[in-house]
Length: 354
Image (tube, rainbow, N blue to C red):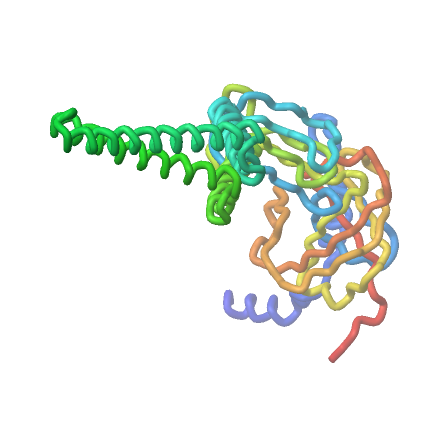
């Protein structure tokens, strides 16, 4: 009996693939959020669109600004929301040692430059005159000593001088003759000027001092972090007195050009054949229900990847591949960088086939 009933039920039952009235009624019902909360689901615009979750970003993504060296932060010169020009100082690290090093290097350059000038210009007129007078004086003393030695030697033959006196006079004559030769050499050097080798050595010392100065200046410049672009300060990660570690995971400042915002939309791989450049797009956000932010497609990715934006929907598929599509938005001040959005891109009515 039971077998017959089951067979009859299977024969006369409605097809399991057919839509029943109860299914239509259940699908058509709309449940309001409990407690009067707003429904975060966004209405789909009328028309043929390709949709996907997205996120708001600056016109050229975010720029994470870091320092080349580690150090304690002396001053943070910007705050979130400030607009700065390229090259402006954002953060200053403590730089007492580097400042002193630059001052010492600049003093070395001045000393080396003065030494080069003295070598190039040679001795002053007064120095040359002094060298000439000293040479004449030394020559006169040498002649006088030679005359005394000759007279004593002649006197010694007649017994008028002792051999010891003659020997001392001869030695003094030799000393005065050597001093005269030395003074004459100094005279010639003063008149002739500096040697070519001396000039080369002085120039080399100046170049080395300038290199040390440039190195000290570069080390000091690294203690100041400058804005690489013109834009708005989106985040300031550190405060004065904190220690910054170069190469860490946290940047000092996050900035971007927010004069024109963009939305980076994740398009499912099933819909990429319906995309086209310059397509019109609509962006909707839960914060502004019923308001459309319009733009157009300016970039279509060339590489499939994982989703960038994930929602809290429990039925969302996270294992699907997506293609990034960048939409340039019309100027607006109502959206915020990092805000999650829903993007709708006008679909290509006749997708290309290969």
